[in-house]
Structure formats: structure tokens, C-alpha cells
Image 1 (spheres, helix red, strand yellow):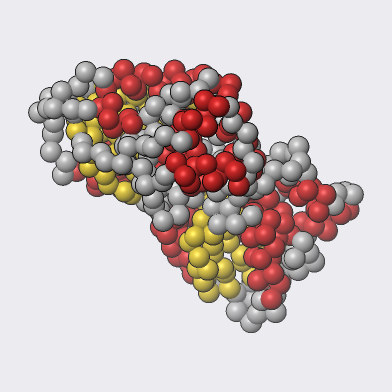
Image 2: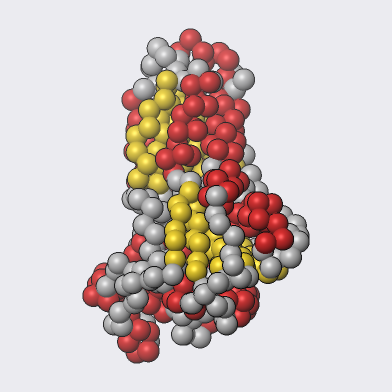
Length: 418
């Protein structure tokens, strides 16, 4: 089996391990039934999969429900549940309309009722009822995503511009109780930041929000600045939260598959958080250092990098990481590096991430494509597309950060990869 086949096998095993089915099932198994109505609201890129499992477990106990997921992430009908698809990473009119359906669903509940609230990454864009207009909110999100700010910093801004973030959705559910089951996509599992914490009290402050705005040069209207200066709810009384899944699980599964394939794996970190290109160059340098190894080795890094947009190209953080690493391993015949988003999408593209090996930079040079120029234009998608370096899994049904892997085959195994 060649080294790319090894890479694809590791990707499949890691993503399969992170599917929320068993975790959601376990979280609901011993949950007492509601004395009144039980309604379901599921938001995020993994919301369809989570809602399907919840419906399988609870059946007719769920009297009504709303799922809000990213375009093309729904996998079919769920009986008794209304499914909406909306914009990500920028909220659109469908995000607003679907969120209002969820709000209508929980209005007027009483203390005997229960809301099953399923949360996964991507909810910050998909679940939105903003104080600002759709156009102004889109502009703010564009600025934030292009600034190089990390997801926590972005969400500190987002939650102050919203009627449902920072615990406010839980307040809308009162006096009903809320069981919130959260699939974490943020390093450290900060519950107030995952999907901007719609059912969890906020730990950030208005001072932090203003500092972030100034640090990244975000231009806001007077109304938006006034919203940043207001404090968010710091106490929520009607919610019980269970957290499921994490990037640790993703990396451990990748490690297990590496062992099965004959590699000696090391998990470098589960909290990778830096510029994507910098991470790629670092992983490439590791691969280059081990190029003469006498045993096959693998190095695994989980987390979420960022891209500071400077060009007009197409790509995502995982594709940019992979392409940047190709410079360091050019010409090596026993090395591969790949990086994927566990949700199956990377930035505004149809790829989950990118794969490179020692031939990638060489093949691009033969096509008169300079990797440095591509990175400067943030156009990793089109470059990788020309050398069969895009990894496309389709929507996976989960979302627990990204995983990046370095594979180096022992010298004695090089002939197998040819």
C-alpha cells in the first residue's frame, strides 16, 4: 500500500471515531423524560447527525424540533423534525429565518417542558438573530475571518451582536429546562465559546471585545460599538450541559491507525493554534529531519490554525498548511503530510483539506506554479487541485477541530511507495 493510501486510511479512522452518534446516545440514555413537552433544537455542522441520533433514542417523546446546519450537510428527513440549511462561515437570510423558527419553538414553554439543545461547531454563523442588519453583520464577519483572529477572539465579538448567543437562547427557553449536549470544536472545550455559547453564561468582557476590535483593526458602526461595550449574561440557571467528543479523540484515533499501519506515532499537541502556513513549515521541517529514519514514524497535531487573508484566492486553513509544508519536503520520496477538518469542509471550499508529498512542489514547479506566490494569494485550493492534493470526504456529520499528520516511511520501505 502506498503512503497516500495510508493517509486516507488514517483520515477515515479519525473521522469515524469522532462521529457523535455514540456520545449523544450515551448522554441521553439515562435522561429522565419531561413531565410536559420535549422539543429539540440542533445547531451546527454536525447538527443533522446529532439530531438523528437523539430522535432514534427518544422517538415520539420529542414533540417538535428544528435542525439548522450548513448547506449540503443535511442527510435526509428526520421524522417530526424541521431541517434548515444556512450560510457558513457568514450568516445569511436563511440563518436568521431558521433561528427565528427555533426561537418560536421555545417561546411559551412552561416549567414542566424540556429543550434538548444539541450544539456543534459552526453554530456561530448558522444560529443567529442579530441586532444588526444582515448586511452589516456579514461585513463584520468578513472582517473578523480575514483578520487572523482566532475563533475565541472572533466569538467574543460575535456574541455581543446577537440575541441568541452568550446564554441568551437559554434565557428565551425559560422557564423550561434545557439539556445542552455539546460537540466541542474549540481547543480546551470552552463552553461559552463553542457556537458562541447560546446556552452558557459568558466569561468574556466588553473590555476584551473592544481590545480585539482595536487589535485587528475591525471597523464597526456606532451601534455595533455600543453593543460591544454592553455586558452579556454571566449566570444561567435553567441549563444542564454535557460535553461530548473532542480533538483529543480525533488524534488518538489517528495514532491508533498509524500503529496499525506500521508507524511509530507521536502526538505533538492537541492545541495547535497559529498561522496555518507557519504550522505547515514546522511540520515540513520535522519530516525533513526524520527523512533518513530506520523506522516508519508519524507525528500528529490537532487543533485549529488561522489564515490572515492577504490575497484573493480560494482555499482553507488545512489546504494552506499542507501546501506550505510541501516546500520543506520537496524531492523526498518517503514523506507525506496532510491536514483535514473533521467536518469535511475547509474554509469556503468543497475539500476537507490537503495532502502533499515529496512530489508536490516539484510537480507544481513543472507547471510554472510557485508555491510562495500561491500562499501569498491564499490560493491553495487551485494549486492542490492541479496535483491531486485535495482531500474530499464530503460532510462527515461531526466537527471536532482539525488533525494534521506527518508520515515518514523507513528507508527499507521506500520501494513500496513507488
